[in-house]
Length: 312
Image 1 (cartoon, helix red, strand yellow):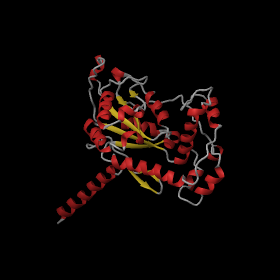
Image 2: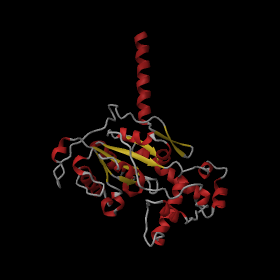
Image 3: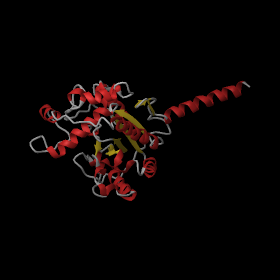
């Protein structure tokens, strides 16, 4: 009886550990709440290494250096561009931008797989490519660029090829909405001397772009916030069986250990990372929304009220 009871207790403990690993993030109270992080050293989710043999060049002496595969899964205006420049400041990381923004590369699952194969075989060339001696190779992929529509095949590909997913979200989708609307306006207005810039590198440029205050549709606002959250929750549900980590934009700004955790997740040497990009919309949200009174009235007393006062 003692042996039986001991075996049952051990079994329950092992099951609880597995459930925690498979439940990296839960979706509660209109926000993503990170729970137990993935253990990158666990047998099930250990980082897989690769020795790609590109067709377009010779890795030479770096041919024996292992490479890790990753993908940044995010939404537009969630800080993914800034996050990617941070990763690319690492001497061993090549993150190749938003490659699926081009429709032909995602018109069907075959074109998606062909594009992924080129990237992970080191045959994709961008300004971020470090080629021969890259220790981690990847790119950023927006949820609305065929990722959710073809999730079954992509999850299968990630698990088969050992691709680690880095989810990047914003805790405050209202600030993301301001950024989306302002960036959309600047595509036509071209406020910086007739040039459209999604990202800037000086406080003067940031101030110039932040002078435009978008009008947010208060009638559909709550529904729009819910849709943003639902998309994130759906992505996490679809990719739950992959090796992944969840990163929040706000934590990258306020918590210095977050970038260290990302590097450890990729199993690359931990280094100080930097970016030249400057944040555009700083300070209170009331300074960046033209119909602030309407938005404040709409969200007050709802579960989204906290987004009105969030710093980032």
